[in-house]
Image (spheres, helix red, strand yellow):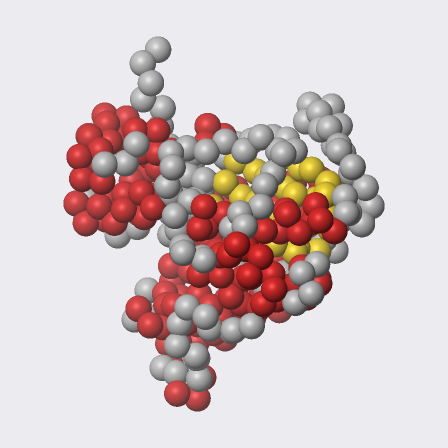
Length: 314
């Protein structure tokens, strides 16, 4: 069943039908620069989904946009869920990233998927965003698709054994537990403080722990459309899926450049926090632009997205 969407006037919706939700930032600027960005967004997403009784079947957080496969009871519930998710994340994010004004484009894009075949195609499409943008070889290898957490609590780190953990690690875990029990997402101040004295291994364990305790993705329901989780991954490996109802905008051919740019900025500018690059004035950003163009070979438009500035001549 084909559904047309007029984003300016109304939103196509059917009760209990999976919706593909797509959201970009204003001007296509980067959203996620480092792990703290992803974790603050993901925990906000999961808390908001619980509050609105929205079911998440597939999630893909890309550096400059977001894909969600969700089931809501009605259009008002879906809109309220996205409104609060966007508002609450933007509030925290804008302070840390020295940003003013709206962060996300409005309204968000969404399209209902009627029938099992359409749902499968969408789940494959959303799950494969990481490999399609050259961020991982397989869908489950991209951390921010959260697919590996369906069967493994620590897919990207060594399993955490609290009885053998350091005192600072146990304190960090206790604070995460307390924040989760309050029904609150993690915030940037917490993330910076909790990870400050942890070593690399502990930081990865803490990341996996936070994802696990907050995670509300319904893997079982998603896998049901493929007769099992393994079959779902096999389908993703053999097909990219497709999306005809939402006009997705891509910047460049690969998102690998964003991590390269962050690494270069931290090293060359001696930044303690990658977000500090966003506080630079326009002249300084122009100098950083030239440096990134020279040292990474990234397309100009992706450097603009990274620096959150438009350098087009008017």
